[in-house]
Image (cartoon, rainbow, N blue to C red; front, side, top):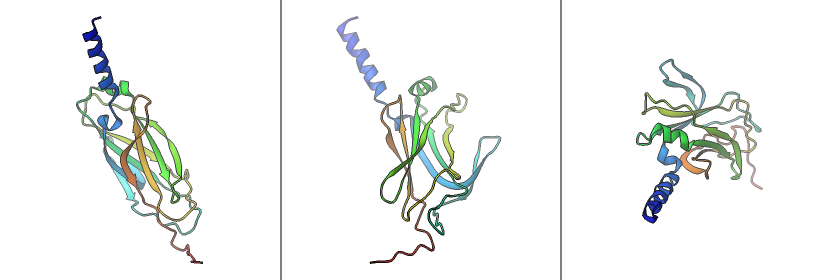
Amino acid sequence: MTKAKSRKNNHTEDKSNSLKFTDLLMPDLLILCEDYIVSNENNLSVIKILDMVKPDELPYNPPKLVLIATFFRNPSIEISRFIELAPELKVVIRNPSGALIEIGEFPISKISETKPWLVERLILNLSGGIQLNSSGGYFFEVYGRVHGGNYEHTHLRLMPVAKPRNLKIVNS
């Protein structure tokens, strides 16, 4: 192989390996709700969007809680290339003191060749799976990565939890 051809191949490999998660999937929506339905036509219906959760007391373990994140797949990326890059999501909750509670990592594996405009969805049922121990804002954040690389913030962020209704803060 000639030096020129070798440099060209290395340049191509460097370019393809430099793809970020947000080059493959464009963040669209992050919502917290009580429940959802997916129709036979693959349409998503959301039941009771929660823009603010105000528990009566702490600790609070939400009985019904679903987190939904949606992304538009970049139509210029071939499906075979998309599958090869193996995009993954990680969801975390940042509590009021800034500590992270990792919910989990999730591969995006449902790809439709017949509908390249398909919105990729991550639907997490968190019912009974998280406990809120202190008052203040809890941020739900979504991170993405490709090829097992480093996670990058997708800029999907949500803060639905406020202080409990009957929790009294006494100044000393």
